[in-house]
Length: 374
Image (cartoon, rainbow, N blue to C red; front, side):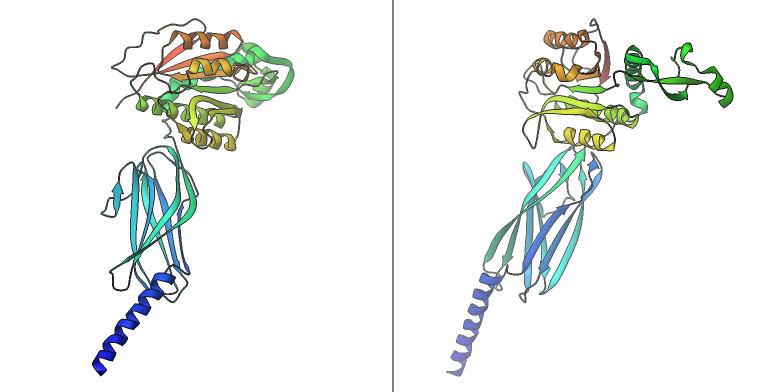
């Protein structure tokens, strides 16, 4: 009889422990998953931190923490990761009572984008490992992956042409009576701008700088549409990198930069339009806008968008840099409408070897070819 009571008591004790564990296992348990706060550029390494804190007296021999992230974030390959459209990352911990565990995971940010994690899923097993208990917690963490920047040397020809257009615009609207200061002579400066007395004192060639009645501005017009049914996402991604790289160089030279694209904002779902601005904050806004840009299958035709935004585009006679792979006559005519307002336009054609480029000359603006490889 004593043996029977002992066995019954043991079963009762286990049942009570299982019942208590089932009901209270998540009490005092907090789990957080957080991306690093600083943005990264495409192709670089970033990190994510998991924090598990158990503030109760219960011991969890097995606690599985899972969350979904975009597959363009390349986590270390192991058996805990399941890949479909999203990557499901699973990590298993053994958590003692009143213990805090912090784990930092390194991963590769393989593609530009705006990445979020908004839920973490928890799973533990019963003490006898014959049942599973599940719970999920809402959270919000995000990571900006900026477009990869193209090397300055590769962009030298395009950049020189852009600066030449901006210099021409400045001369066109320069106020000869508003003297601002002196700077070093640059190739292309007219001789009548040289300050000979100041040059003699400085033992260097200096030119007068005047304020302009119109500030130099640069607006990138980024077209991510396709003419046919085929999609050229790789070409459009290169166009995004061009806008980021050239825009960063403009901002570094204190030239206000803006952006208009028929790609939509991943957060707002609206057309991306960034008013021209300058400084580090504007550079970050440009990078963030390009990171959130969604390449959709049927975006608004860019020539229509250019006409709709024509007053904003041509305000204060900016340099417009059109980046596109398209050759539609409607797009050419929309570009000509911009130049008729007094703004200047530089057309950067993102081309591939297997698609012929037929639009060689267009009145009123120059076309530069940028070959997309790989």
